[in-house]
Image 1 (cartoon, rainbow, N blue to C red):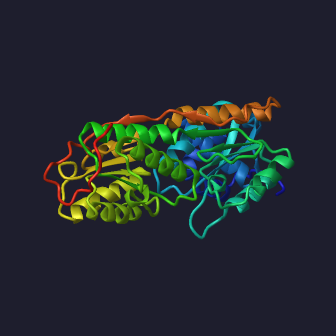
Image 2 (image 1 turned 45 degrees about the vertical axis):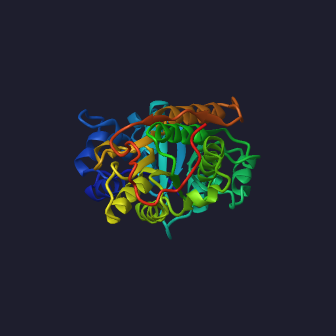
Image 3 (image 1 turned 120 degrees about the horizontal axis):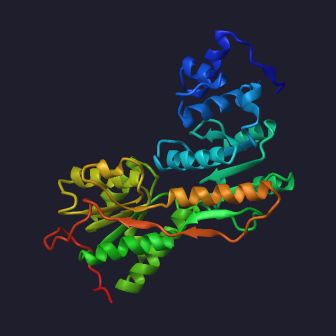
Length: 356
């Protein structure tokens, strides 16, 4: 796209304001270097300038060390905007202009976004929970990017053989924390509501769950305690309803959204949370502490992971290769109001040996 000098006409300000999601007054203040604009709004305007192909005013040009693509899934799951905000802020602090690419069902695909980013001459790309996390998807797309010399970083979804740094939450540790907490409350009939197991984080959580209940309870058929659906409220509802009907007194979920669905499922069956059924989420998304009841969850270290991802990418851009070993970040159990002691009179329990 040919870059043009920005004309001083309101229609162009309107275009920029619409692209950036701010007012025309905010656009004007940024372009004229005036105070009173948040760092986030300022960055949105600068990104809009780049995306629409306008040349930055002279006084703003030196602030960008280059463009960096950030590809994330749909933003309905609050943890993805959290990752995007952290990574965008850290890129901006290092002088880079982040270009946020969000996917939605039936919308622009990851590969289409990558081509768009390449057309804009990005210096690197961060992928959060993208196709690299899907064990059924080809990794050739990432090999091609590396073959073109484009630095990339993969977040939450290790892709073996891809020449790129990888940053992930330790899903095994997360499952261990959730189960230990529920065991301490007396629960033995514990189920797992997880998203599609073709995704690396789901697969790891499922494998850790199976190993732990076999170790602590002697369970030899973990599949009877696992339901795989979608990472949505509706998916959590369907999975939890099935687990509760089969006698489980506690449900560990693959995301906070699924956990909210699990709470809804328990209530639709006439049960209380946590008096009758305990629910544990995963992510600790923004505002999750204010749900009813406040959700016990395993917190992803989003800030630390975002910092590591950006540091690795900036090092790669500078020609200093970062480590190729996957960096695993330890999560943190946050106990709130959705878990409680196992109810001795809970209906139709699944029998299991005592914890060793």
